Image (cartoon, one colour):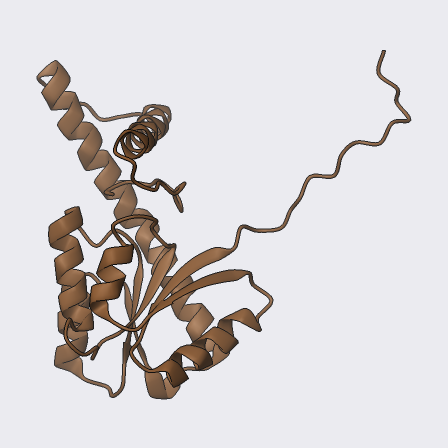
Length: 204
């Protein structure tokens, strides 16, 4: 018999920390962005690297919620990093805030074309602007991933039934879960790290 006087365990309402991959050659600027994010009321977990090559290696395993990338990295530039990710993953797999030293319309266009979600000029970086850019990048990612999921569903439908089918919201949700389970199983079988997704977990 259940004792009505027994206390019910409290359910945690603390949001999951957002995992941010910060890619910037300058240790000074990395320290600045780190302070801006970790001093905020929102929970963040930061991984920091100083080169595009190091970021590319990390992206082979655990995926962050968002990347902050200096556009003018030495060696593999920020734009080239996104292009390589797109080749390796089929697309840039996470939201990206591209950091630029100076306003440059052509550079901003190339960054967006390569897969950046939003652009933030370093001279305009404040704690609020940095958090807002991250929020915007993640929010812009949701409808894009929805379109990708719908395209993957259509491809699977044609492959297995011979005809395209418009999914119901429930069918699409079940399909997303099945995809994620498949990717987790594949990661276990190949000894690759797997990270539960930000949202739909598609395109990895």
